[in-house]
Image 1 (cartoon, rainbow, N blue to C red):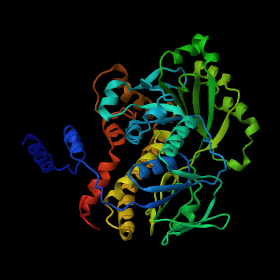
Image 2 (image 1 turned 180 degrees about the vertical axis):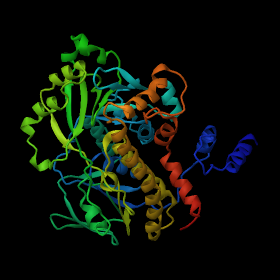
Image 3 (image 1 turned 60 degrees about the vertical axis):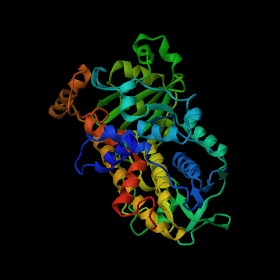
Length: 466
């Protein structure tokens, strides 16, 4: 009787339409009552792209009982880059997909994020990422080497029996069949095509050429590098950064440097963002090391000493996509960077792709027949376009908040972050990792629940036919 009373009570409590967290406490009751229907069609699905987003999507679809085949153009898998952050909104989903044992040997759990003044490293902003943070958002905050993250997803996919076909470039899409055409001329059909083919997506142009907008260059580039921690351990100017796992970010005029340890503490990851509006085709990577050091000359001497330890780096253009009005076309859909490329300033690019994949799998639990796929995809894209467009916006905003030159705005920003550095209560912060409203929106997001709520709103309950 008590259980039925709880279900009745929670059902009668409707989520407010205004921004509020007052009903967070009843999530435990709602989640216990949530179940996926078992009588939905099991689809033959093609996923194009075996990057982080494609693999996560394939794993999510497979765990929901669908048959999944991945087509990847590269003959050999491998992720380019160094460190990547896995925030709790992503960690929570990955654990649910069974990635825990695959990630555990490689992840590091930082205990905090410290914002530091560019000139002397003084702490000006602070976010705790310890047990309380984990409990609040249902999962820990992790950092990991990008290659290890990709390897974990790949091994999970193989263990689930997902077929991954390498060296198979997709050159055309038929959204109605639906089917893909490979470079060798082969035509492959499925019930659903999911294109997760990255920022240089072929699918985006073919399926949405009439509404596609060029990727935007907001005027920034980034040097990426790792430093051997053995070079830092014996120097008091740098050893303090290795005392405990943490993220440290120096911010200044049009520039910032994000740092944290990866590889179980064996490497020190660095991302050095700076202004650059030149054409990437004109860049000379052979001078990247010298150019990088010049960009941050005069910054905190402890930071520049670490920059001096870097023996190789690669300069990357930073791009963002304009929000799209559609992701789906017939029985095909794009997601991940193909749909919503964003600046890395919220550390949410890969997390959004993971959310996309899980949300798509959840949307398909509302599918009554294969003929209803376009309608289901329409609701899926509506939910995800809103979420990812807002995250693109938040990332662009950080690109402004972090990069004030010294002056009144910088002083006001730093003053607004003082309470969080002192451990006292605050209601707002320019640090979006700490700002209470942004925190809950960013890390407390439940992609499956948002999908279910959208289907209810549009009159498609779990037991209804489209």
